[in-house]
Image 1: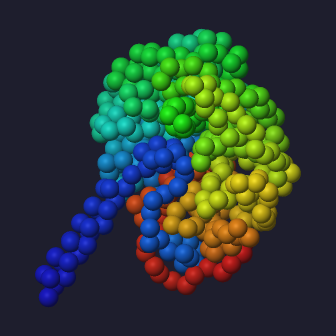
Image 2 (image 1 turned 120 degrees about the vertical axis):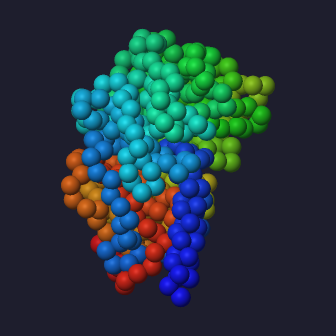
Length: 420
């Protein structure tokens, strides 16, 4: 009987490990850069005090980078010992290797920003100071590296470079800004230049670019320090530039593309949605609506079921706001866990406040319900700005030198009450 139980435990452990090995979140905001997880069967409420904490990785250094997951490994970046470092861990939270990627950012809000991008066997990361590195994702061996700021003779913006690199086929996309080009496409195999877009005369913003295809045209769009631009993904030609300014050039949100339209939201400047019109390879943007009801800072906005969800900054300070995607009309606003970053999985929003409060939020078109909540452990340095990740039945939260892995599939204890 004991032997049978032992074998059964081994089988179940093997199944669990296999499921984790299949976990896939290879870049900032996931496979599609929409911050929507494909996870299913997750609980709609948590035990009192939150889901079970599986493990805590410590000593990771300081930074605001989120995590990526691929082929049974977890990746993040930090400032450690005066250097920016890329870090690989296994699914048990044990550090496998650390590789230096240039000097650490020691200016305002010191620490790392961008999240590593995994493409097959390779990892790509850009440091806050522009050091761009390609590593073997399994071993950490350096394949190539150089400083993109130096290469295009640009300058590091006020809060340092924050984008997470985008892979498009054989191209690696980086947006260093400056007088020579705003965006460049590099050969991902060796780092050689394929094309560079015209300069907008601006420094880089803090957003990560997205790839979109509409009416037969492939485009890459992002925010610069003072505008919203679109670039031909195959040639590097500038397709559009729309002036969009926020205080201190805090254009941070990753744009959203859906149904032939693009959307952005930034502090004070608010939210804007445009229709993308393509004719004979030329593009024009038609503004559909504009509102200051939602002015997202750096927590991101998520589009699900025809609604936009995010934390507002100025007009509705730190309130949770829902806009109708079609009209831009505010559906509702209300308190949640405070100013927060978001991710979405299986019908629920996962909110992480800048002060370490975590909420499981049920969104609807008429309101939202904070179903469960808990606080992450104390000890992490700075605000909890890294965006949460739901992948492989786990909730991952990075805060400073700590990475927490919570088990979303384990059911135990009583559920937490509504409200904070």
